[in-house]
Amino acid sequence: MKNRITELRAERRWTQADLAQRAEVSRQTINAVETGKFDPSLPLAFRLARLFEMTIEEIFIDEQ
Image (tube, rainbow, N blue to C red; front, side, top):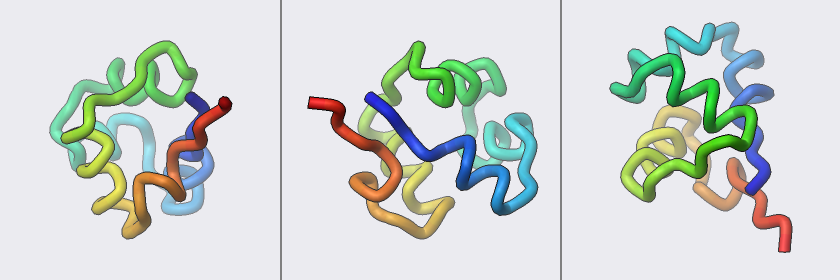
């Protein structure tokens, strides 16, 4: 699943560590989500959507 996390994070000038702290996960988790190595759980996807003030569908793109 593709996502816009890197782009959205850069727009806000947040580091991976900044976003991780706000989302209450590790920086490694944010890195894994950004690189597509890990699809976030639904609770994490909702947390990220709230942080970016967007819908999940605006952040995560289904490649099918």
